[in-house]
Image (tube, rainbow, N blue to C red; front, top):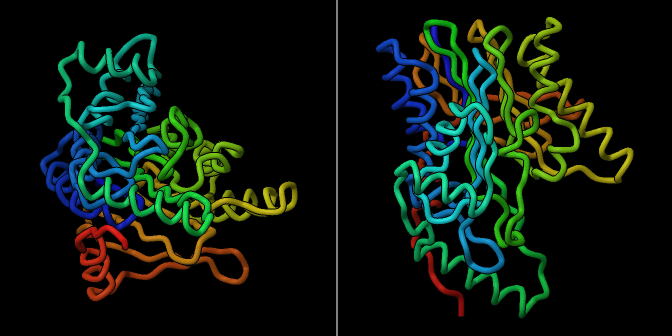
Length: 320
């Protein structure tokens, strides 16, 4: 028995690669690192790794986190510049006794000292998107785009070992040094091999207010299925934010328990995610919230998947 669940269609190829490792009895941590790095290396995904959209100073700052469900070891990095795979740095940090969460220059010094690959993560495509947005802001007085498609994953291997991880470039045109929920344990991710794990994607400033990944794991520990835990946590927290603040930012959560059962919940119109188990190959699903606030989902059509890929690979052009 093994399984993996991940946020967004962009995770598909990584989950497929990780599934092959899991079939061969690989460790959950190794499979997870492979899957996340696959997303980080693809320049067409604008919110993770290479090709990630820059901050307001046109610098790509990356966040990532890794958690081991057996030992509860954690490793987190924030606002890292010019390193290819922040997930690898985060996992290495999880093996340290202390100093497990490093940001900015401190994280970069650590990465350099341990021989991680240096790389300019700002692509020409990302520069064009940045320049177009600057022009729109000056001409139309628009607010900066607040895209926040974190890749988050939870993995269970055949030996009942569970791990969770996240990686993101954060909000497009964010302020320099800004951190969201993704590298924050309990908010962006949480996992306990004795229970299960969860991961979030959405507006970090709101997700952090509810420590929602930990909340889902806590609910599973109390006996809820992953689907029940996700629905309850997202629906109730969305309602609480709207009650107290008048609005709630986007949030979508995935979860898997230590039996390979999984669940998902969202407060947006459409949220894509990927699931792979010993019983099924990596499959893309589309989740939606119904009128009662519960999440429903269905397999994505071949046409939807093809359009997704074509849209992201379309040439970037400067606007007139």
